[in-house]
Image 1 (spheres, rainbow, N blue to C red):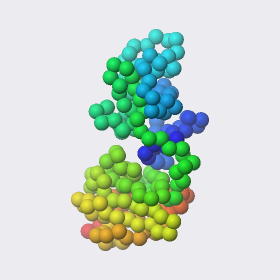
Image 2 (image 1 turned 90 degrees about the vertical axis):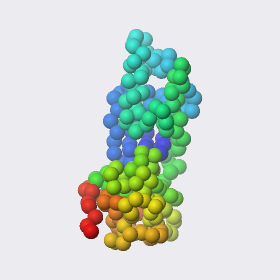
Image 3 (image 1 turned 45 degrees about the horizontal axis):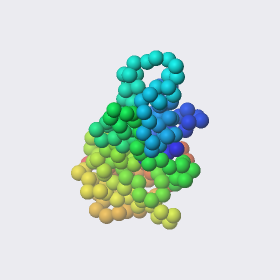
Image 4 (image 1 turned 180 degrees about the horizontal axis):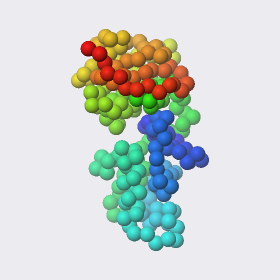
Amino acid sequence: MVFERFAFDSERRELLDGTHSVHLGPQAFRLLEILIANHPRALPKQELYESIWQKTFVDESNLAGLINELRAALGDRARKPRFIRTVHGFGYAFCCELNDESARPRVGSVVFRGREFPLQEGENILGRDATAGIQIDDTTVSRKHATITIQEDAVTLEDLDSKNGTYLDGVKLTEPASIRDGQTFVLGDASVLFRRSGASTATMSGLKRKP
């Protein structure tokens, strides 16, 4: 299953952020698995206790601890949940839209500081904010900085009125520009590599834009 930039594979026991594996303890992984399987139904705490710990007695704080572990791994917040919603006095629910991974073919990728992020057909938002489809974690990058739009016959890069600008071939973008496979662009001071296909790319460190 795919939700936002994450991919969850129950059979392989794996949670991916782009192509980066996210570490979860076995009980936290089991909790996420249960919540996703029952999406969008809210599950009572007692049902979660029985599914995770079965007949073992545990303190109520154990479940809250697992919820906190999941939220930290997903970059989620209790007050403004994107993935895990608290139903006060009852339990929890997975509240993000789920998509079958096979229904979202990968048509490209970007590489930032050694991490590869898959791109889907259509608009892909890049920015510092955790809600951006592609999170570029750099202080010079705006919350929603730029978009890469992938169509069958064209790929374009567009700045979203960012504070520090988007640069392609050393030129600051003022309108959408075509981008090709293997080309590097710069968001603020963060250098990002674009790949048109889904092939794996070599590690690339974050570079600083020269004045």
